[in-house]
Image (cartoon, rainbow, N blue to C red; front, side):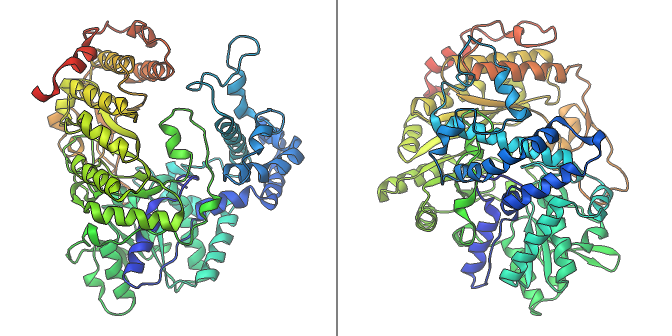
Length: 625
């Protein structure tokens, strides 16, 4: 389970690549199919049976709501799904009456709004929402109510995005997954198994590739593999994707291979070519590339060194075979940047493989997806863009780079304008001085609608320790240049970095306040720093003043996040509440002039940041930076 509004790109990339090598390949999105099946009339009836089979003591307000309102829910759900698929837009009028959808607990947040009598409870959402947006938000709340019922009645681990995530995330031992997979299949499992068998029957594959980008994809992927092994044990199953590449690099757990035959690391093109040659009897196992496999009771890792497929030669992604008209444009978070992730179907494309900076101390810079930087030419990228638009009929693109390089974006923008190719695009960048006002305007002219980038801890001392390569002044000028060009700007923010003090944290929120006050950023999100074993902090903790907690000596499965001890006496939990509260209000234009200390639930010192720091940075001549 990744997201329901658009396909995760890995299958589109690999399908396009394999077909470019004349290898027959098909793709199926079983995550989307699962949700649509569960919320079909037959699926809803089965959920009701599960609710009614619960012991009285296990009934919850949500299951009572579902059972009591079942007729209305069953009548509304198919229409809600069609509306979220863009197939019935006029239903928005009915949804917005608040009398069409049966409302469960998820709608309570709307009614908790305190305002003038008769005032619109959604008016705070970055201005009054339009008709369609308002209805999509209400329809998303309705689906979240149904997800709550699935959690209460079928599987407490169910989530649309992070299904059973705790079974796999940084899980040193395979036991939790093994125990869950040994349990009798419940309604969700049985539905997924049936969809798996239908896909097997339709495509008759010799090899099945399972892409698991996140920990919340692993449990269901192994349920799929389990179904394949039971029905067609001769089919070769292969596990890969972002989760594998970050967490299973030291895999030694043989029980995983009861479900899959091979596990491959990093960019999939070269390992797959080698593996398919092996399956065809043209290559021995000793010449596999970046591949784990089981030999008796032992796990072997084979990496016969061959060059990766050049980024220019990986082919054009294809969405052929995916039901592009059935994805659901959800609107659960009203933050204008966050909605881009869940609302609308975006063609996902990569401008360059890896990161051209690859120095940030919190990032997995030692891994291939960051460390191996390789860009495609602007001509090749626009060829791919034109082919994708012709195939999908969609002109929206999300560039999924770790950090899209300014030089490549400039060339891409010029090529798009030269050819007269009109698209809308957004992606992630580094806020570096190369993004001049002139370049920002050029990118906007080429279709750039939004950018995100890491300000991380808004402290020059910590930015230097992070090796971020930017300063707060520089971030202010770059973000303002994008904002002035009409581009939505989102800042990734971090707290809890090693040696971060309470004063650093208070000053960081003051910098953020001033960035909002001066129209530099429109949106942001604070997340807690997590140390990973593949980052510079994880590999050299002493340089950052922390001590790592030892991992279990018998760890045989996942290894990624690692706990650490920071002797700096800072209450990051208490401060985190204040950071998020302040940021949330700033995004709504509230409290911009308030004393920064007022947002924190704990006593904090006053800020040391000059009141007009960002204003003066914007007046500074950037050419002297």
